[in-house]
Image (tube, rainbow, N blue to C red):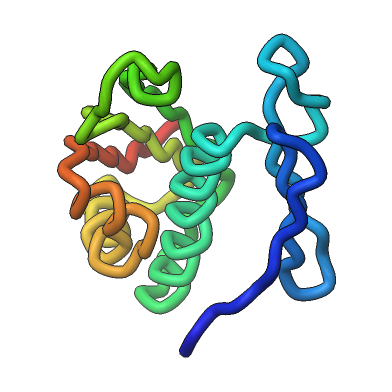
Length: 144
């Protein structure tokens, strides 16, 4: 499969990307010269990781017959801003990311660990971060 699109760039800070029948807007906050109509590129990258973990996690849970219950995902990322600030070239802008996938479920912790292991195999965005060298930690946690 080849993904193709043509984005419009109406300002230095805003990019409008057609995706299916949607118009995705990536923008900078007002204080950085944007119009705050959407997440910044780096925020969008983190949002994509969280969303991919959610989608692929649920697909794996369904395949394994595990009910995840109510899910929330906490994220903490170390971000080296020197690159985007043009201070110096940075090889690894996100040196570390930790996700905690909280599942209010009757499933066992062992079942959640299985879902997590399968999700790590198939989450495309997690694979991108890991291949770039990011220390990516994803913990699946049973909550009450």
